[in-house]
Length: 273
Image 1: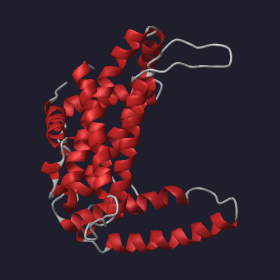
Image 2 (image 1 turned 90 degrees about the vertical axis):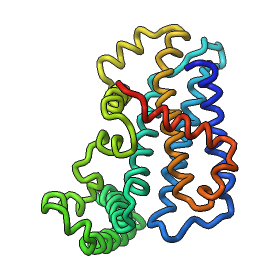
Image 3 (image 1 turned 180 degrees about the vertical axis):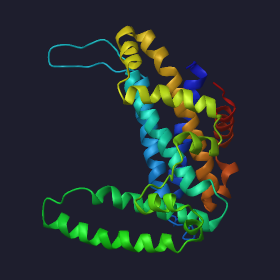
């Protein structure tokens, strides 16, 4: 990552914080189903990107007896960027990708149901958890009834209907499909995503790269590609979020970082493998 890119990353992070500051004290639009969760997904993306920026600067471990050399933990950066990327693709799929309000409501209901069904498989350990499980069983039934009434559900095959009711909100769509729908080039996404997943899943290649990157310069170089993806994710998230929230959309040209957001969004969508 060149020095100007490092500056761009800081400007993008400042832009994300500026967006949050502008929304403080304002009510989110009530006509967008689950918009509260869109805000939460955005916070998750920003937190991951802030951690990436912190790790990219390098760190020194200080113990009671010794100050160790500076390290850039490019492996953890890759894992964080993968999480930020998947979070962005989730937000885009659920809240942005469709122009049909009915389909957006359906997608949110499917994703919302998935959150309940994920937890339904856990065994309760105390009375409060037992009570919560009973309460959430009702929420699951209510959401399933809402989903079944949707024309979007009725248009699905029986196989996909069954998946939806189990909480499988992507309905056979892999991350690559969601990425293409979000504007990424398919070949670029698949290559980058495979690289990032290698660190999360402890692939042989990721271990070799960790073993062979002992110097600070090597570690920094290894981190640059992942940091570039993080910048694209952050820019695309902010662009979508600005256009999702009326108060931000109406004032987007007042945001000093909006041109930078647009540039990095375009960069990400033009990248090829």
